[in-house]
Length: 325
Image 1: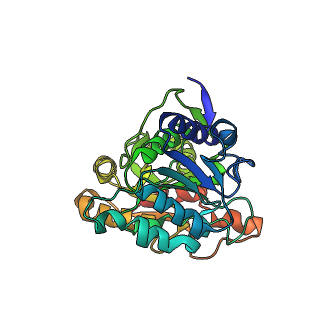
Image 2 (image 1 turned 90 degrees about the horizontal axis):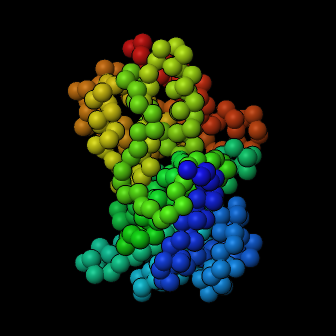
């Protein structure tokens, strides 16, 4: 099978859905002529024109607000926020309008809106352009939150998100855009709310998200040399969360390490840990451990930023400590 980068896989998903459904359009800062801040929407305006690939002013509240209105009246917008860090400017439109509208109208209103937003540290972009804020959005009833780690997943999940009749937050780690993987040329969907076991193992379950899936797989490969068999589970969708796949893995390994780049306190791992404690406590042979960023803004300094981001060494260290308990 051919290989694509995650960037190209997302671009192809957008292109295929725009060809399939004339109600799908793209909007955001520099998504048209410039092709997007990271190049994800490159070439779309040449094929679909400025009416369906709309360059917007630098105003996130207007980008999201207009998209909510368009979705509620029959279109299927895919709006891009240049960085997840900018969602604060549009939070009312996201959590008070998009997320609530279907419920408040008794299911009669549909809001088929996708909000794409890059996240993540690693490029010395400092505290206002490097955060992972998925936990904010997981907490809002009415929103779906998708966070792919692989090109194959990104394409299939984005197509499912665009076809969904509910608002979907589609989070893309900016340092995964260049990751390559096998991606079918044809259109396909991956159900939202279905996790994927990226590597099977028997000694410990590592539940990791986005870029940390790759760190977890690297740590698991290193630990194999020491005779430690780690299973790596990628939730792929954080809301709804696939409890069943995670619990089944815990039943097999009896140990859990949760890894994410978001800060530890009230991060996505806290909800996953609570769910495991509620649904699989009797299967645990040791406490649940979390490997996360510290509770601090993302540093600008490259050495400090490197320390801030969970490493494969920290993941392996947590696993080995857990196995000794």
